[in-house]
Image (cartoon, rainbow, N blue to C red; front, side):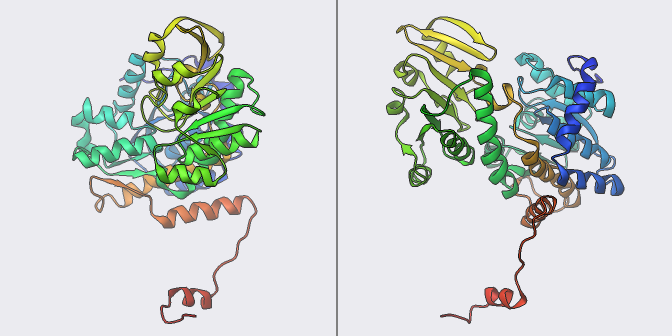
Length: 419
């Protein structure tokens, strides 16, 4: 069993500084860490975590360790690792990390198996790659698993499919379904960080440009509003009639992607599905169109089709590759079609990840305290914990809100009082 596999331990000092900087904007998680350090609710628990290895994640992992857990960490995306943070976790926290930015597919999955090597009791996932590997390749380990947590929409969809198929071997807490996660992380985090990644990769001017956002879920909502805030004309494409109607009522143009393909300057996929941008869309795009993904996996853009349509390609800038198509037009693909906000930029701001990772820490604790009551299915974290995280966040922001009076509570609980 390997102790760790990171790029270079000499990067650790920079990673420690980066982690400490992020920690300043994560007061809710810090409060949980202080409580965990006193009460040790995770004592003796082995945790395997497959997450984006960032400064914010480092603060979560430190919290889990403070609670008594033995943690092994691997990356949930080959391009999202901050190598200095990975080194800092190994050197200063003694946490086995298996993650190198730019690792190939084989190394990526080997690292997942490294994270599973200590036979986990709890899994923490971002996209369900670790849980999938556990069920597919290390099924014998599932008997020792109390439960798991899942961070993303894409992962929750996969896990609910496993539940429906009757193959899910242990309970999962869908952290993504907590309001203090999806209303803030998905909207404000994805919205801001996606545009940050695009700007870093291209120096693109949003003002006056036409931007297509594929998908109007919580993440697509955030990307659309942030792009419009920078002055872009935003077109939304959808397959869900309700979401499409919402986008239109929010003031965005809505149409089929095939119709939008001819005029847009920039395309951003945020769906969690495959081949959203396909060959016939690419064929219609104007010369110089930019394509990127801020969903989860690198499957939203049909890269195989793009390669078949291409007569030459060249690297213009880091994470920015220009494809010259057989029709003579050029399109630019960012970050290999992987998450542009984490592959090129630094992911969500620490202030929003504070709530997401507070959910993760409390979900791990909840799995332990309710282990005898949970079935092999996907659960939402209880609303009272969601509300408590919101109250703690407001407190750290210096915000005090009103409370219902006894009279108001009585009125809301009564069916006898009418007009």
